[in-house]
Length: 153
Image (cartoon, rainbow, N blue to C red; front, side, top):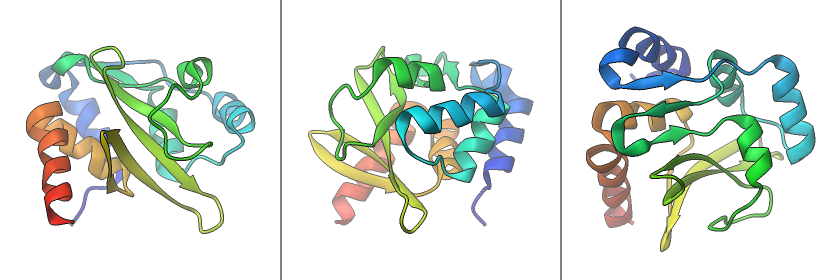
């Protein structure tokens, strides 16, 4: 059974010291609404749940971060995006590489992708994305997973 965002949040809460994760203070409901208004999108429920728990985090693992909502607004669209309303929500090594979300408001779905040379759609689950990172970090987790997905297509 795949982990839910609640499972992943509980794991982060219980293992953050061992995982080398520093949580940012949670986003308020008003922060989330303001983000949606400014970005002209509706965040998926699992993203809202996550940002209500913490407004991103930073990790000792290759300086990987989940980007806080206010920083996403401040940075705007800084390249490597497939669609106009997409945005980067995770980065490592101070924006050397980024993971992005593409939201389809019409069918209330989204996909998480990396556009490092060739777009690789990784998942439609924030919980799965975070769990892969927590299990293997950037290189043995996210990049290995990305390569497996590219090879299977």
